[in-house]
Length: 247
Image (cartoon, rainbow, N blue to C red; front, side):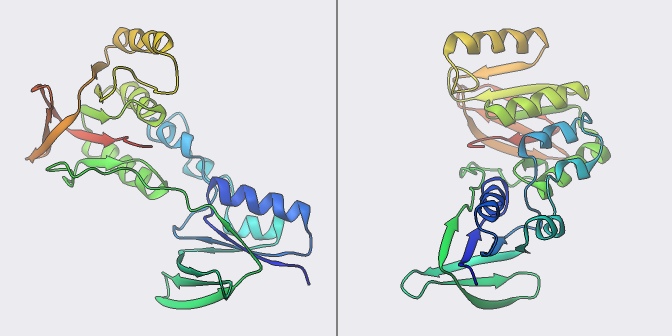
């Protein structure tokens, strides 16, 4: 019998680790825990499903629990959350969310790949019903439903990172009037300012409203729309807000 390995987290890092581990050791017992209902989905493809470039939702799912088990012999447990780790005893306490039970699972080796969560700063009004974060499949389902049924015409994307700009691109392609608010003096922080200037020029050419060096002071929801008050004193009134801060 090989070693027993528990992997906490089943999206990009966890699923890749499980597949690599199986290729290295055919005898290992591999258990992969994922708090959410989905594993190994295409994060960067989420905005393109909302925009319609990716037509089928299933195309976002790189792998399913059943497929992972059949191909790599990995015990995939979705909706199972790691609550605590006892490193002395080598035991993980786990909550089976669906069945509302807590149990212990021992391990020989432990791999941590829990990912992160979107930043949600304590801004007044941030819990308004037309404000969304895009981080996982349930998030994309909520946004897609809102776009399809409410049919917003104006949107503010808060945050000018990669996911924020992909959302701006796709919502613009759907015909929305898009505003991007970024606290830094440029979008896409990892690239040089000179390169970012090319992106700024392209966005303005596409008539995307760009607010750089500015942050959000508050949100005020009323009758289906939200007033976005910026630190500079400027105000936007939009039908939908996408939070793309720290993603």
